[in-house]
Image (cartoon, rainbow, N blue to C red; front, side):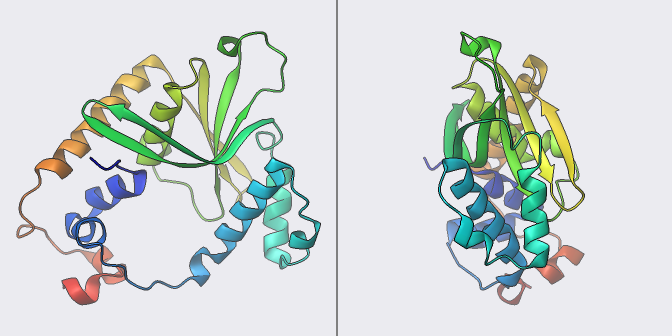
Length: 217
């Protein structure tokens, strides 16, 4: 069975028809790349920077807005923590389902603690746009924390770095959250696996902005 990513879970919850087009029929529709350009550039730059690569020439290609965002990220308290990995694939099994995705960066406290159990690990996600409306229970949050918890038996936090507003949204991973996250993940995966009919789907205003609307509506 293929692994369910946060985007797959979000897509199905928003619209099973879109999920069907995108992930079952694997129909790829063109989108405006300019909308994602800034985010991709900042993410790539952050990855090179954290790995210790020389990015002097790459920084000269940034425009004024991109430079401001990049400077904001470099000064972020969590981005300055000790580097473990970036653009990092994580996966795990929850119930009978595999889930996973690619995190922006994994960091830890700047400490010389003798054991990993004494450390705090931080999953970073940089946002050049807006953070999720309900970040604590966003599928990205839940999937990444659950996957990381299988590797790092210690304190875990998910940090949305809101570069637009220079703010951090900090989510602590607790035993209660772990149970709740597992229940929610299994529930949505069950829905996807057992879904049979597309006939009863109702169209809404969000359909007007969907890249599949021309072959759907």
